[in-house]
Image (cartoon, rainbow, N blue to C red; front, side):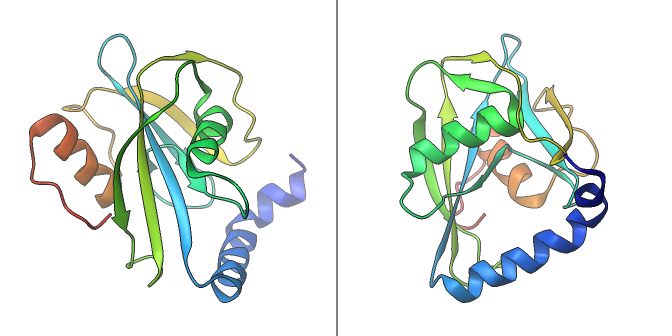
Length: 157
């Protein structure tokens, strides 16, 4: 990725998000859950947004959500699906945007691949659910508590 884009990414991303919100009545994002052989969960830290997140991103116009999560997991997390990901749930993300929703998928069978999100991901790693890094976002923490600790499922990201 070019040097200028890395410097301006924190400004460019919010501008594009604002544009998308004005152009689209509803937005749809996807996030993925991939566990390694030790039961640790894959998290990423972006260059343009604070905190640790489950890998994912936006569903493009004309793209199926399941295709979007397969693409995003490979790009951001270096995880290539061997079998089709399984839909875990659908969540409103109205704190981020009044008409934003997130589909969460689980990757049961995957292999490592070279991540291709040049400059977008500052760090990626696998973490034990009971030993998460500092700065995990509230929505990510909520999903992990639901999946691993039996917390009550919320409809909100």
